[in-house]
Length: 472
Image 1 (cartoon, rainbow, N blue to C red):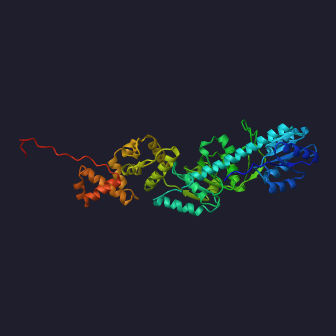
Image 2 (image 1 turned 120 degrees about the horizontal axis):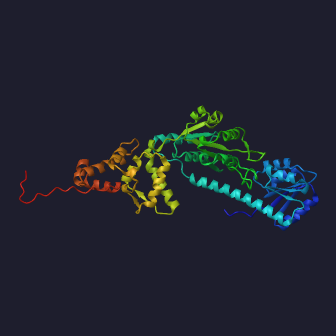
Image 3 (image 1 turned 180 degrees about the horizontal axis):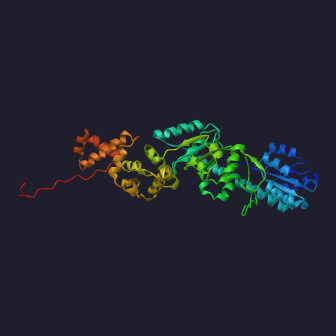
């Protein structure tokens, strides 16, 4: 879809008719259409009716307090930038308006060039925020094109629970070891819910310094702290009407826990450095690999927040408990990684797949994906053989393969492949002898060798007796 023409409407709230005429002329010269009103109710009605790109609020000697107007305007349209046009005698009030949600201020009567520059800068910043929001939403959508895959009964229960809780508004707490795919479960909940058309926003609480996490969650006002050169929206504001995923929630500091609890209870928050409450509609999905109940007992995690988060709980099993999922995960990751790295997709032999499936994967799904990405880059051909795997996965292949054949969830085809491999190894690659032992024809054996990608061990040679030797 092609983007529409840019919004050039500017709502002007000022009780001075002469100032409205001046601003109408200046804005028209800069290519904007001024919508002038004298009273706040008219301005609020114009916001609903016309949806301007920005708002100019007059602050003169007769009306030195912009707080009421700013709060009303920001509550009605929190994403539209508001600029204050202040009488020089009311400069402190103009500066204070920045903490009330104003984007910037100018002194009246406005200089035409400064008016255009300040307005353009505010609109560019607002456009950047909107583009960032859309980009985050699009990235979330692209990475959630697949729900968690499973061939195992352990994950089947997780998928059923996702289907049941997705339509609800309740908070969800996801338990699982690091790397099991807790974020994928959270995305599956979001994209199966009525909020699927809105943003999915994620924040890793462990990767964020304690002094910055509040700003990340709630945003901050211009000048709230050193380096805060502009007002910034936080994750809650970006996730409005969507879902917010808080990973490693156990790493959150107690003061931030208290503020998070307030948002969950009251559905409102204030930006850092601000004094205006913003209403928000966000479904929170949290995840942890820690024992939150033990942390509550130890006093490091708030009990009230713990019970507020665990309205619904989902436990994601580690990969070692669902090894039947490994072949399907391998195929999905190879497709995804090949596209992402712009290289040709590789194929894993049955022998290498059996070794991958038998590995314990202490790093879970994340470790499996990292190994496959390394193989995609380092393997010279288009086939990943057993010898291409990392030594920790490929060593003692006979033990690995035999263990893989006995794992619960192993398919009959995988067991048949392992039996044929071991029989060929026993006969030294003699296909006739192997076929006899297996009770199948030689041509059938040959077809299955090709189907399973088996390598044939060299035939064992009997030592020749020297001429004239005495055989005993």
